[in-house]
Image 1 (cartoon, rainbow, N blue to C red):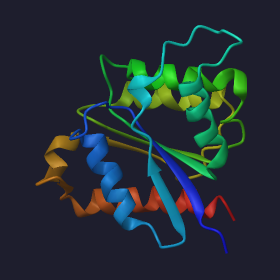
Image 2 (image 1 turned 120 degrees about the vertical axis):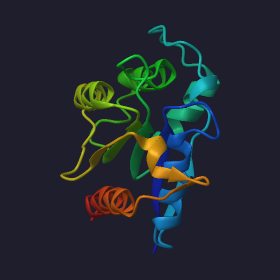
Image 3 (image 1 turned 135 degrees about the vertical axis):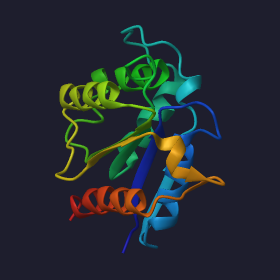
Image 4 (image 1 turned 180 degrees about the vertical axis):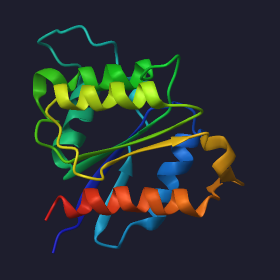
Length: 172
């Protein structure tokens, strides 16, 4: 039996960010039948310009999405919105349609996060991504729920696990 492939897209470019900590915790929660890859190249993608010629680095990113069974996005909120680099990466998928009908979960982990969470859900609708029931979570005041590089809040851990379970269930 082949493994389920989940590609994770962090909205923050910092390796020690809250979103990377959440994704690291997610990786520990997964069963052995799930292959989990965090794509750390969001910040390396060139600006989307609508060109018909897809740069090799972008094609590699699109190929990763295409090869995945599901996508997990974990993002902060910047200036009441979606981080620019993440939005740029998602813009590259418009022409390819690689997120269309792709099971996709969203975790917004930020100080507030409400506006970015809503904006991101709208973006996923525009891209025709399939967010399963229970496949999104807003974790406000994330910094207060992390200690020593781990999620310390047990309720938040349970909520994150529920999102992942929902995403994996949507694949069967």
